[in-house]
Each structure stands twice: as C-alpha cells, then as structure tokens.
Image 1 (tube, rainbow, N blue to C red):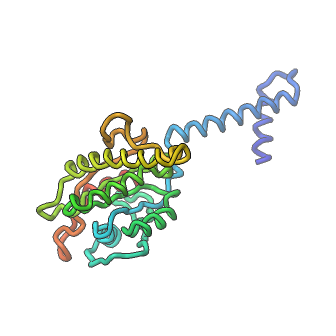
Image 2: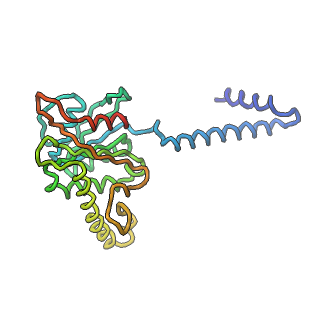
Image 3: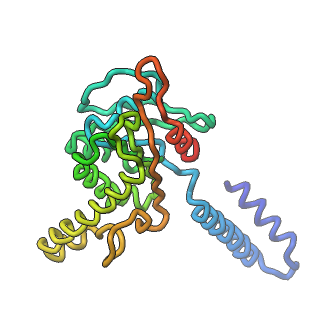
Length: 262
C-alpha cells in the first residue's frame, strides 16, 4: 500500500509544474484517491451491490406445503417421502446455468420454529422461495397470508431487496388453485390483515406504531405491485410431486427463476 501511494504521488509530481510545493502534490494525490474511492462506492450502489449478495436461499411455507419434497427434487433430483421436521435441511445447490453454488435451506413449517430458523439466515439471503399448497389453499389462506405479511415486514428482506418467489405447488391435483387465483386471494386477505394489524398497533400507542409500517398504499386495497421499490416478487406454478417416484417433477418455472437469481 505504501509503495502504491509513493508511485501515485510520484506520478502526480511528474505532471505538475516545478513550482508546486511537495505538500500540494500530496494533497492533490490524496484528492485523486478519495475521488476514485467515491466513484467505486457509487458504482457498487448503482449496480445493486451484486458482489455482496447472500449465500442462502430459504424455502418457507406452512407444514405439508411440499417444501421438503421440493428441496429433495432440487438438490438430489429425486422423489423422496418426507415428514414434518423441527429442524432445517440444508445443502449446496448449483443452478442449471452453472452459476456459483448457493446453500438451499428448507425451513420448518411450524410457526415458532420457522421464525427461529429463519432468523439464523435472514441477514445473508440470496432469495426466498415461499411454497404454497395450492390444493388446500382456501383452508390455509390465513396462515399463508400471515407468513407473507411478516416476510415483507422483515427489514432484512425489504431493505436487502431480496427477490421472493411464490410457488403455487401441487398443481398436479385437480382442485389446485392456479397462480393468478392464489395471488388475487392473497391480496384480498392481506388487505384485511393490514386493517387488523394496524388497529392492533394503534391500540399499543405510539411505541407500537413505530415498530412496523402497514404493507401497501394507504386508502386502497393491497396489491403486490405496491410493495416497496426494489422488492421483486413473482408467482409461478409447480408440482414437486409431479408423476411421483418414477416420474419427473414440474419445476421448470422454479429452476428458470433460480437460474436468474443465483
């Protein structure tokens, strides 16, 4: 470092008139270095800081949504019978585009365990994949809504501009809701939850009000397009089960999305 500084100062000295004092040459050299560093920082911010993206992709969802089977399909390319877990599954995952390997984390569906495990990884997220049971969605919509609402209240996700993929799983079943129906119903439920959450914060007084800002735009029904600028969300259809043990899963939209964000 000292050698580089000496070279820079010498270069500046060579292009300056002879009557410029030595200390003035040092000031000019220091100004050049400062300006260069400021430019590099600005360039990093404009480009989104891609070089510092996190290493974890977390799979979130309620129990029995198909998270673990999706995890097995993505990591091992196999169908495996799964069971409810109270501990996360974690493994390296390399996208089809041969990008840099990341760590895929299957977060347990139990609400209390889910939050504890997610907190371990949320500050180093590459992306989040929310797995939704499209077949049982009408009966589970409240739980999914609360999960999604809390996810977009998480500063590590919003400020970090972490991309989120909403995967409407179990599309192989005849009663499964399609991705547009899931999105619309979620928006309606979030609008209702926002009202109840806001009322609760108001009842807590000014201290409670400062803790979280309601999702979306005030005075209008919630839409995912109203999420903070820079937050990317996409809905896709999938079937982790597919044709079962001897067949392939229907994951093309998921793997394509992962290729873009890994």
